[in-house]
Image (cartoon, rainbow, N blue to C red):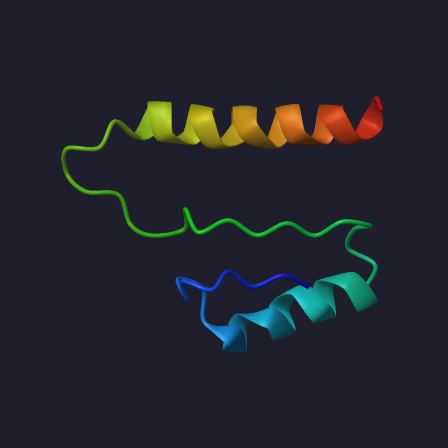
Length: 65
């Protein structure tokens, strides 16, 4: 597991990744810090689209070396 030094993700959250891995929920578990509430001025559809696009591109790069 890798934890960024800026501590934007609390170390206590690492257990969630551990249990996802040993529970067979994936071969590669990737967390993002974009799980905070969006502000009133946020364009939700663009935020969601950008996050989904990133996941799709990353998954595609792993599936097609």
